Length: 593
Image (cartoon, rainbow, N blue to C red; front, side, top):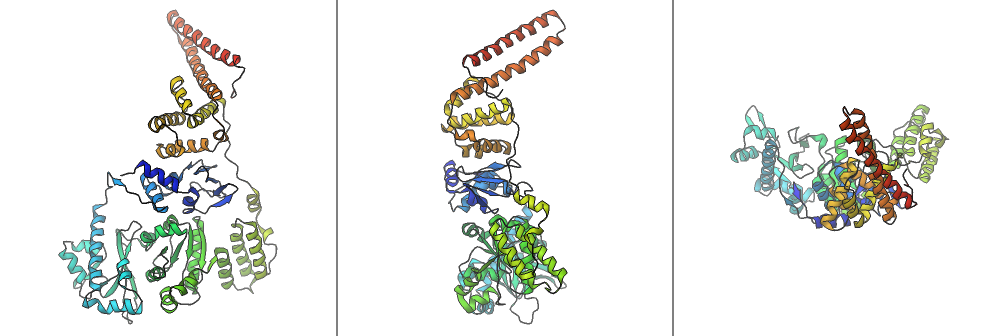
């Protein structure tokens, strides 16, 4: 657990735009003076998440989830509040100095493997600079145009031929089983030997920067296995890994997009060209877990796979998967048939940047890819193509875009009536406007809500509530009232953001957001209305007591008990009459009756 200074939390909150922060996770579009998005906290098929840049809060009108920048990150990533603050600080480039009061326990087996892999990285990077590593260093420097700075940054190393890594790690005190568990060594007929012997090593880390394995390259032209990667281990699960995520996540959030390439050397080439918001999935097969990790860095993903058939097929599959996770997709078409590092060597940084900057939209890529892979002389195949592209068109938000691509599809296929082929459900969905979830609120419910709104607007209302009432019937309302009082006593003011940050449960956060976005919150504090609401709650309290006393009279077994209950009943009726008379004298009937 970490302790973050309250001043830092406030500074981060002021610097962070809720639209920008949410845009890092999901696509967001403008809607009048606010913004909207598909809510990630329920199965949302329409934009039901409303984002208010003025108030710096968000609210879903279907599932009710709401809050501020920290709440969104906390709920989206399923992390604790301090972690959410640190992530937002990272996104807005705020230098946060946190004090660790408690470090979470790490599985000791994992920690031992982390240490072992770090020692392996130290050894292999050193070996690259030795006489034995000279041919591999020359290969990297002369043929790949790398230098010591790049090699050091990516911790590129050399695993010698004579099982030196295994010998070194055993001398460091690690056991043979631990070497095998980390997959830096394996057991053969002649005992223990290095998995990556006689190869250049590229360390792979998880998103937190912990080493988990290697990708290793041979420079032997006769070796068909040009690259080998770590096998599945306790730390290494290929379907969960995004290479360079721990380095790229900050720049991806700053730039608002993330480039995804095929391999490790492609990442390095992009970095040499000054493009640091780049990662790879260690091949073109992309899993849902990898997509979700990509999305946590930026919801705007640019796929930069090779321009050959395999690369384009992989782009289509990965793009569809990313789209299903709510990402905004674009594609870089590399028709040069050269890897990024080849382009960099031949055309320099500007040559690579020129290709990377020529992004095409997802719908354009899909249309081009499907047409290329369709027999346009076969009606059935062409019809299938039209249906697939039309599905993509229906996902577009802008009507102009829909019309343009529908016309373009007609030009390419000769099949007319594209816009009219939408299903009845699709047409209904297109015209439907999402309305806020409306609940019938009774007089007592509304009175309690108005009391809370008044308390959030006026210190005088807080003092009156504390002196004259001190309770509310609904548990979450009472929790919020007590929280408002606590925060005011401490800070001598009320901040909606502070209330959201310090609320103990999401129900209270949702309540604060609901009240903050209500029309009543925009009105000036009216003490006469507030006092009426206080009287309404007190009157309901008397009504509840009258019901109980009536039951006591009915249940009384002797005259003495019945007389006590009856006297209490008369007293309560008198109190109720006094409250009603007071309201009549003020000529102000209860607004909520």
